[in-house]
Image (cartoon, rainbow, N blue to C red):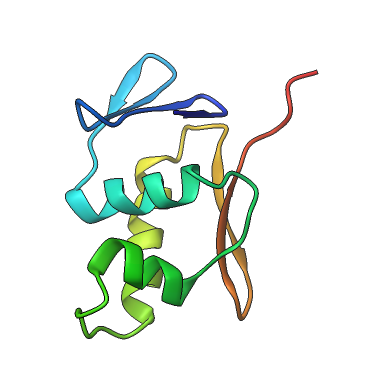
Length: 98
């Protein structure tokens, strides 16, 4: 799975930004995968909570915000970016290749 210069190997649970490996924690990896499955599409905080933490996990939507912030830091050198859609959720976007 590739978005911009971010490549996700689901079988190996590895993320590369260009040629460099990005070290992600389990929840960061799961968040990135959830967003990368729908590049450019807004994913609500509630949906991310369900997909990453599971239906039975009782956490506040701020938990998603904190993990997204860390994910952004770890992908700081990537062309793909996690954008906030205020009041709704997040989307993973990358510049188009022309």
